[in-house]
Length: 74
Image (cartoon, rainbow, N blue to C red):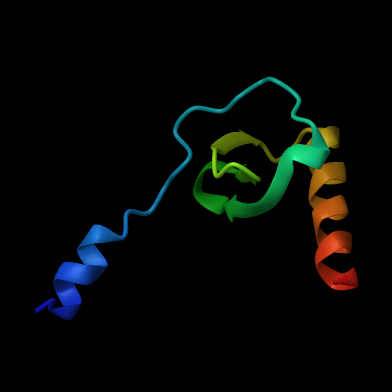
């Protein structure tokens, strides 16, 4: 049997340590998470790859807006 604490320990929280400087294609992105402690955004691609980028980049803001629009139109 699994105890609650054992199950929760297996869920690893991802954090942004290194930020990518490469611009990502918006159509490959599935979602994002905000990481306020490092002022970063973690994009999750459709293949499940997690990539951290600076929240200050203009293309990051545009990608977040695009993902929000997709989410609200579904």
